[in-house]
Length: 286
Image (cartoon, rainbow, N blue to C red; front, side):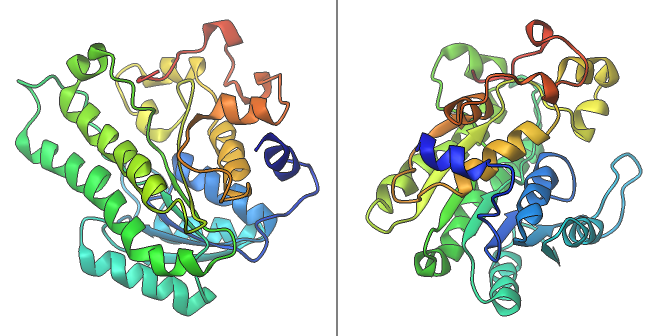
């Protein structure tokens, strides 16, 4: 796998040129960074998200994301939809295939978060996290399977953590942990179920805190992002995974650092938002 990754991040290689990616979410943050990295190769990227209009505290919409993808060298397709709705997901798959002729990659990026302890989390927020994170990941992956089977190197990549069963993660924020681990269980199960189909199914998680609008909008967020890395590190790692041999690369729970290290990258300082490597904040679940 490391040879495939090394080739994938070669400075002049464009292995995703002409490939089609369908991503949930992606109007901003890590999802958009992954989309723009693929677009630099000349990929087609369909973004399905609810953000038809810009929000007061979060810049970017599904339409501005598509424009950025096209400007970066790819072809962007904006699809307004909610991953919780079966019709929206099936419509997104159909629209992507109609526009680009197929689907080579699914990126399950959409996710809801609430780190509240059990007494404090509302059941409305619990249901939201389960519906977006777990059901949405399962539904989008399931709906795209016929087209991924037809691809010569089909991949499903889910932004979810390793299944770390140390009790502290469940004890810290049980509802969120169950929702994220539900995404990871989808990776575990589909990788095994599809092992003979030639579809690579993997999860990817940042080793450190990542600079996103969601983090910046949290109390103390501006201070926190100084100890974070740019979303580019996750995008570069995702690119490497998605351009590897799907038959040989499946069932993994990667961190961005581990993927890039496999490619021979030893200096991550260029991804830092200002802090020294020793002062970066590790992400949760690791």
